[in-house]
Amino acid sequence: MNFEALFKQIIEFFNKLNKRQRYIIIGSVVAVIAVLTFLIVYNSTSTQKQPGYAILFENLNPQDAALIVQYLDKHQIPYIIPKDGVIEVPKDIVQKVRLDVAAQGLPKKSTVGFELFDKSSFGATDFEQRVKYLRALEGELERTIESISAVESAKVNIAIPKPSVFVENQTPPTASVLIKLRPNMILTPKQIQGIKWLVAAAVPKLTPENVKIVDQYGNPLGENDELTQDTEALKAQLTYKKRVEKALEDKIISILAPIVGGKNKVVAKVNVDFDFSKVSSKATLYSPDNVVRSEQTLEESRIGMKPKEVGGVPGAVSNIGPVQGLKSNQVVNKYNKSETTTNYEISTTIKDVKENYPKIKRITAAVVVDGHYQKDKDGKVKFVPLSEIELKNIENLVKNAIGYNPKRGDSVSVSSFEFSRALVQKATTPLGRVMMIVEEYVGPLAPILKYLFLFVIFFIFYKKVLTPFMQKMLETKVEEEEVPKEEITIDEEEIESTYDKIKELKQKVEEQLGITSDVDEEELKYEVLLERVTKMVEEHPEQVARVLENLIKEEHTET
Image (cartoon, rainbow, N blue to C red; front, side):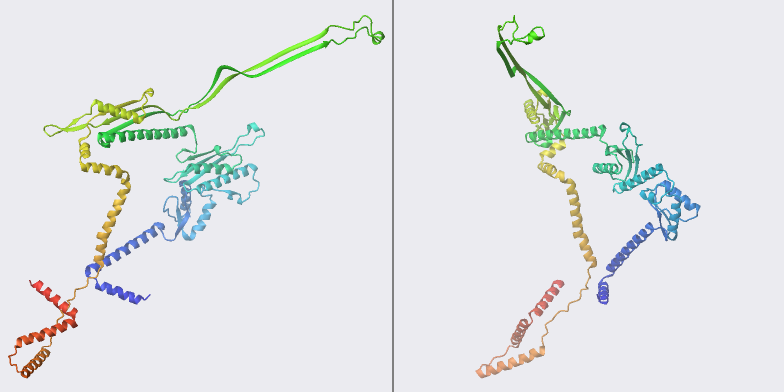
């Protein structure tokens, strides 16, 4: 880049400006430099109020900050406190002071983790090792929880019960977490659940249900207790109730608006009583008619002689041949048995009924409509309420619109009253109707249109005011130089010589023809001049046009 040429162009541009433009440009440059200088100086002084100081500790709580300041005062070490929780000391001794303060066990409230085990201590008991492990685990969990963007600080306490050899006496471990949230920030339900799972996964046998979280105001987080559930259910019920009532009101107004003369001439309010209780019932119905389920029939029959029986005195006689005195034939044995079993079944019907949720208990509606307006003999507008027939018809329309059910105890009230005069006049005039239509359709977009309107105003102001002003202030006023008037110069000597030649030529021709006449010198001069001017116009048309334009301007200014 040729800086010399650029510098020359800047100087030429600056020389072409008038005094006012030079003052404005110089003042603007000075103002910009002053603002930039102020910002640089302010930022440097705010970030480091004293030269040569560095941060010793930051994010200190008041207790640790007080102890560190006390130590620095005792050893006469200079320090500054630029803001809460930050202590600065001279840069050349910051490392030494930091080691000396750490040797005193400061800051005491700082979070410690598994670095507790960096140094092994001989003679430590098992209890001390368990306590150190618990402290380290709590510190690591605190650091992990503090990494969440919405959490400023965290404190974790873990309670691990003493193990027991009896299963029935074993108690599961528990944990409590105190969280300090950053300003204007909250934890989402997923984040709260994540913290519970994080703490539970770090401790053996710890379940997320046994992890309790509390914020800095003492409010429990992530507890789906009965009170919280009831509050959320109540909010949902109220929202549902308002939405249903608003839908019924809009339905009534949309039906009556064409009849009464517009939406501004009818007001409807609906109240719906809901039963939000969940009802589930089971019923078993028995039919009086018996139905044969199964039938069993058993029949037995036996016909024949009864088997012989041998009897007598034990001994040899009874074991030898037939014994005298026993008959060989007896009466025939006949046996018959018949058994029938019939099982009857009772017909039953089991019903599982779940009622609608929610259930409408009662609907009440109040509707107010405007009446008619008539002019009397004096020309005054007089209000005339609606007739009983009109009110009855409107009431029937409202009942049909809301689903009127007399068994539920629903009620509808329709009345006719005079509305506000200003509202009526606004609705009756053509301009008022147009404004109401615009308000109805454009009203919901008012917040967006407001900012859009401001943007359009600023854009027009920038284009029509600022831009022309800046161009006018920066434009170079070129001094109007007087344009020399171009004149057509006519050589008089040349004209005279031409005139003499033409005159001699004319006389010579007349003598040859024998014609004698006096030559009109003025006419001859005019012809010569006209011929000369014609030739000049043909050769230099632009120059002749400028001359004529200057002549017209001079005549216009003189007149």
